[in-house]
Image (cartoon, rainbow, N blue to C red; front, side):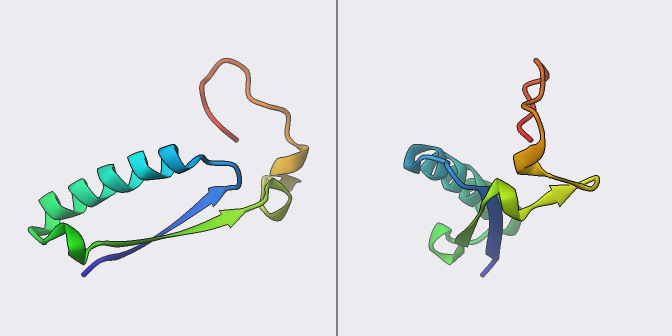
Length: 71
C-alpha cells in the first residue's frame, strides 16, 4: 500500500485536491497493479512564509510573469 505525502501551499480548493487525488490514485493503481483503496494520500499545507528557496521566502517573491509557473 503506497502512502503518498504531498506538501502544498495553502489555498488549494477541495475541487483541486479531488482532481489531484483521482489522478495520483489512478497512476498508482496502474503502476503498482493495486486496488484504489490501497492508496493513501496525505496533504500537508505550507504557508508561503514557511518555505524558502534561493535565500528568499516564497511570501517575499513576486508572482512569476507569464510562464504559468506557481512559485
